[in-house]
Length: 267
Image (cartoon, rainbow, N blue to C red; front, side, top):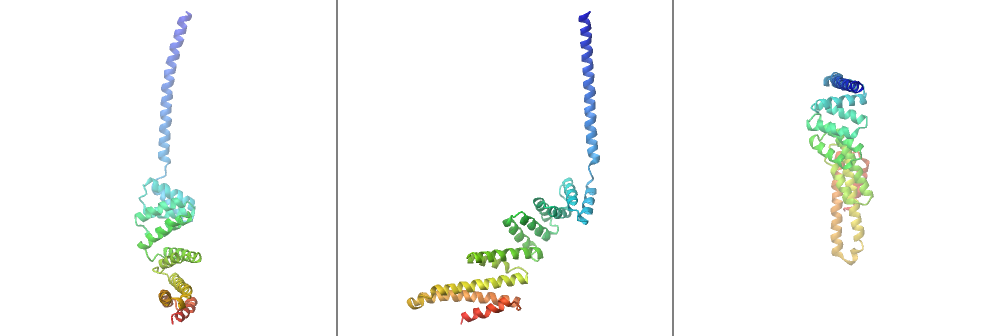
């Protein structure tokens, strides 16, 4: 009897376990299904995300704008170039500079507000101290939109500063190259400053050539004459740069003072 009872108990236990497993499987499936359904209905529709992003952007709530725009673009596979541009601005405002670059690139690729997209991308790169990429982006952008005021200003300022730094470090050729990059820009002040700086640089170079050649005046007349010709060539370059600066900005006091000095040494 004891053996029989044990068998019956064991059998009953097996049946109970099987039934329990089936019930658990059904519960797990139902639970998983509920989660999926909940997520589907909980996910905000793309157009609603875009609207909420626009509303937040318009009141300068950039953290929310960035969150809404970026999720909207993710759901729509980055197809909306305008929203990508504004998402880039929002990202920049919350100091997500790398993300800003990504979204401005989308706007650039799709040619939305392309000049400003380049300008803002460059600024986001500058914020990351990626100077080479910053300058390259400005150069690329200026080819597309040469009159973009932000890019003209930032590009010109970069090379004026770089030229002055090189000049102070005694790197005359590097300084000259930097100043020359500013001349084609459509910016009166920067162009005048670059032309004036080139005039001063050429004048100083000519003066240095003459100074070094001075001892040759009595000992080697031919060599002195050759060096003086080089100096005169640099003085002529200086004069050309300064006269061009005077045409652009006749009121510039530095240019007005420098011109007579160069003309005097050329007599």
